[in-house]
Amino acid sequence: MTAPMRRVTSSAILNALPHAVLVLNGEDDIIAANDAAQAFFGASLSHLRKRPLSAFVPFGSPLLTLPSKVRQEEAGMVEYRVDLSSPRLGTGQIVDIHAIPLPEDPTIVVLTLDPPSMAEKIDRALTSRSAARSVSGLAAMLAHEIRNPLSGIRGAAQLIEPTLEEDDRALARLITAETDRIVKLVDRMEVFGDARPVQRAPVNIHDVLDHVERLARSGFARGIEIRKHYDPSLPPVHANRDQLVQVFLNLVKNAAEAVGATGGSITLTTAFRPGMRVAAPGSPHKVSLPLEFCVKDDGPGVPEDLVPHLFEPFVTTKTNGTGLGLALVAKIVGDHGGVIEIDSNAGTTVRVLMPAYQTGSTQGDAES
Image (cartoon, rainbow, N blue to C red; front, side, top):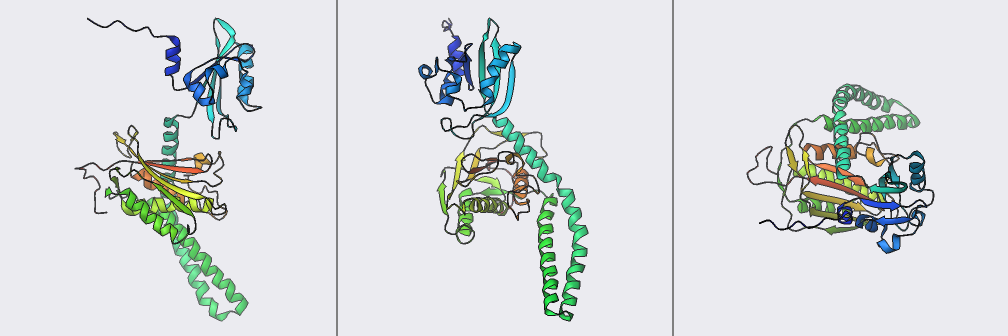
């Protein structure tokens, strides 16, 4: 005999929702809020109730005028990517807002506040992966077409240098130096054209991060505090060790440059996050990405409008940057079947999600 079903209330359903839900009366006073809304605004229901929405939302926010528009049109409306950041709510409070009039009483407006989903972040990361690969054909062509004339220019400058006056010799040496710089840039771009399968093996990520830390402390990050918060129970990552060193050396170098002027710190973290699955490159099957590695800095952060494009080739925040470092990082992580994303709220966090090594895996394995 089955147990009697417990009565499910509407408030229980609302409180089970992961998105913040607010109900406003005709004067835009809050008359109801679910648990997620109370957590979002950092206030209890008794504190929210009967107080105007303007008491909790930044002045001039589109959210404040949305309910009146909904009542006027008697139809639901949506505002995408509204920034509700404030001293009360904190930074990075970007949400999509859905406003719907209650059919029984159109003066009552129901608001839902939806933060960007993980699916949206993963989609952005996969787009960055594709952008990094799209430059591979261009890189191969440039490497072939540019090297020959550059060699000729460099050779000519070296030949004429001894025949010139001292002032003109400096110009010849400048030509040689700039030619070498362009060759190095072409060499970096050529890496994008490497379509060979990644040779992977079980790699201890903590050994990789400790190696990167030693390199950083002895060079570009000398004098910068580097903190480590590792999960010692983490299984090996299925990866190419040398390429992982390249990835995290690049990320730590960027973090060091971000905090260098302010004397901030860099934090390296590792964690196990089960449940994340994405399609692997060239495969219809989804791969679990339970390993999370983060490089965090407390520098000034990255402009919000630039964050979605940071992994695209030739996009950079540096005055003298080439914009290829993070694009190469995105390619390497993508070739491993992983995902990389950036959050830039109160500093910058670069998050890398990678597959764990599974006993018996032989695809692309090699000694690391």
